[in-house]
Length: 365
Image (cartoon, rainbow, N blue to C red):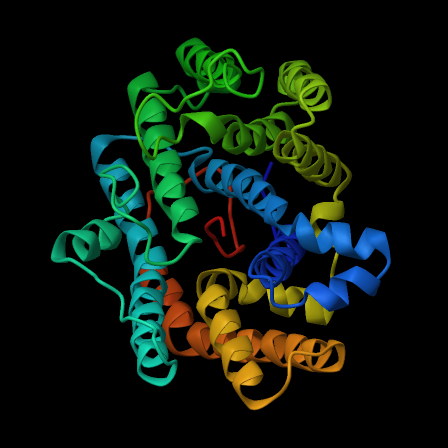
């Protein structure tokens, strides 16, 4: 089966996920308390729980990465090119956001009375560049960066798993060893959403949320191999039941996203759904929006409240202004940095595969 066209649903979900995360940080920063107190409760709940958009991103990452590697023979050379390609795709916008965050922090210290400039060590900066800040115990320069650290771990572990299987592309599930290793990974990942294991075993570990990425992988594999579907259903049911019993919104949103991806893929809606121009635009800039929005929100509201009173009217005005500035900055970041990095990554060819892909590979954003 050849895959033709873009996964428009995936792009649309990226737009949704990035926007609700932006709303969450407006709320968690306590920028609009009066406004949230008067809006309908369901709107306030969406805003306050917008951090669950990260769950959508992780499942999408699993689906997209499974798609990008499916039907390819994973060798050491392939694994190296794959990780280099991801680095070329992710690093330039990420590094630019590190600079932007620090620049705004130093500027804020200049204009806000009594505010100290950030105390950044060389070790902290280097570990951020390498996505190792959480693993090595450094405080984060930008609160959203923790997800990038996990994403890189997801990519590396998944490609190493497939490398270890020496998969047979002509066999069902690419060979017995491939399905055994993926199944074992899924079983191990259940230790965390079920609550059997509470810690990540080491700082900054990918393990507590590994199941979310694997839900995306499972949704893709079930689409390409329908006989895999019972395993996906069992995996989703186990996580969903634990999510309900433990009131775990992250797990529940992860399962819902995987269900939507699988159902839309098998029905062909994945190429058509959520094809609204504004949402596709948000999906296109979603990585840049996710990276840059938090310091931009803080700077926008800080500047706004230095100029005006903190009233309900001005909360509403500065809320819309902050969202507009976030989108403008993200669009500029995409045009100047992310877009060229995408094109650069595509110049690094992976080996020929049994399927075609015209979709844009995106991180979790």
